[in-house]
Image (cartoon, rainbow, N blue to C red; front, side):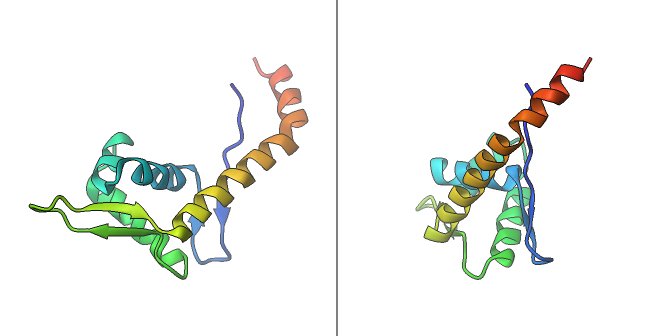
Length: 111
């Protein structure tokens, strides 16, 4: 299966690509940075680092996290976090649609 992988560089302020977006989607789904990272086979430190990187990239937090412990903690996307995921997935679909003829031509010549 041929596909486009989209990475958006934001004028030297950071970037967003399929890995960070999938992490955000899983945080939203699972309610946990740790569980989302585990699902992607990454350490909690790596997952948290990516969340921090996204927080530094945008002007508002993308994830609200509360520490674990007896009450369990958890994480959820902010409204901005959801908007980022939606904007990225829309851009990804638009790019795939626009490049479909070129992808088909490349596939015809692939061995």
